[in-house]
Image 1 (cartoon, rainbow, N blue to C red):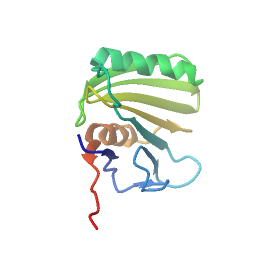
Image 2 (cartoon, one colour; image 1 turned 180 degrees about the vertical axis):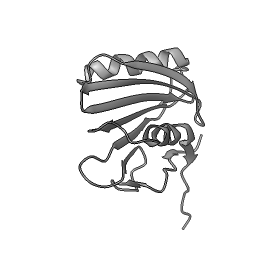
Image 3 (cartoon, rainbow, N blue to C red; image 1 turned 60 degrees about the horizontal axis):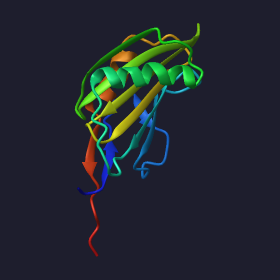
Image 4 (cartoon, rainbow, N blue to C red; image 1 turned 90 degrees about the horizontal axis):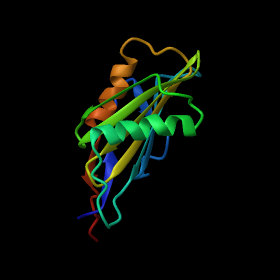
Length: 148
């Protein structure tokens, strides 16, 4: 299988805030200023052995268990579903009354992708749908090799 990289297509009001050449980590910000929500998307590529092949419920469980480990507290709600890469599981957390955090674990049965979205405010209308849309439409694409 050729080397892969993560590709996201954020809405126009989102922008990349890290090195675009990074193949396994993407950081996006919605809007400008201190209250802009920040999304990080990182991928762990399958390295061999038995593929993890997680179910939607397992991915949702990963999100629910990971939030408390990183200080987000107990999950407020959780869900799972289908996306362009394959399956996702997500959980929402409120680390404090002003902050909202959401984690997604996404898999194509081989690779695992972790997405976090944290905002220091109650999200604006459409903001959560945009974040979910980024997760839903993210893809893994073959890395183009330059022939010399």
